[in-house]
Image 1 (spheres, rainbow, N blue to C red):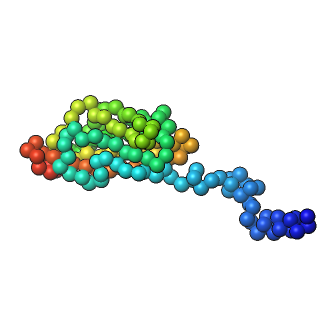
Image 2 (image 1 turned 135 degrees about the vertical axis):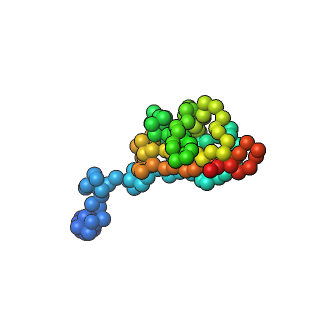
Image 3 (image 1 turned 45 degrees about the vertical axis):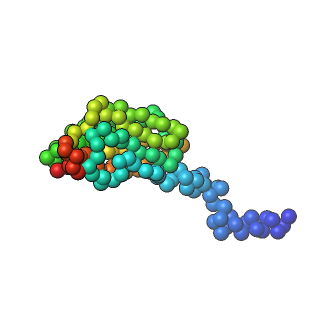
Length: 149
């Protein structure tokens, strides 16, 4: 019994069990590291896309659907340095952990778009993207070229 007490005392004094005594240090690194993104569609900087291309982002963890709002997941176009938010709906597929943005109509030809996910999107366990995430794509022109301005 003395041997176990001595080893426990050594571990505590050496700081190896400090996480068990201090709840702030005992937090799992899973709750500290930011939410991971598996993929986006379209991919970053893709050009020449059809105007009815689906827009989505897939996460590594289950998302809390109540945190998916137009304030923190949105699509906007860049036209002559002006930003225009695209109206649409957000849909979450829990099985694939994918969030879809569904525009009210087709996107415009020859247009640069930016998709933004703000830090308010959270996992069921409360993990966030921290500073958010954005990616860009460009639709094709009306004759089938790469488009964009």
